[in-house]
Image 1: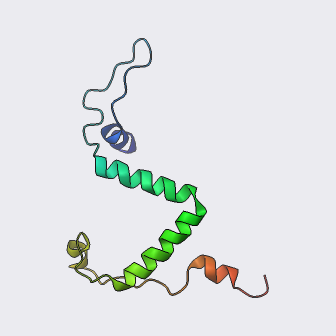
Image 2: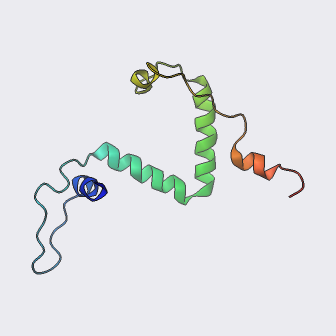
Image 3: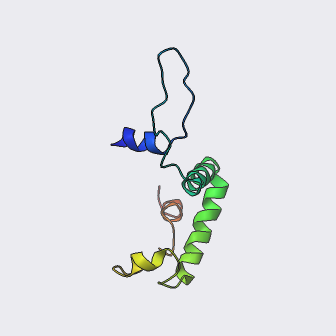
Length: 99
């Protein structure tokens, strides 16, 4: 299943050698939005300072978002909004006494 998903969303690439043909329909499910989200995820996780800033911003914004905001509306119909923890796991471990 993972291979099929990858073939569906990867951009179609030209054949690289003799006997290798492009898979018909390869990249047919690729969307610009999904590609941008994954690229943003990669950029954030490659830069620790950006990752920390984004997690802090997400925590602050998460406390202030109404339960029926945009794409969360359908999800929130059947769930309660999760409350962000007051301190991150990294903060708890950094401040743990004795170790």
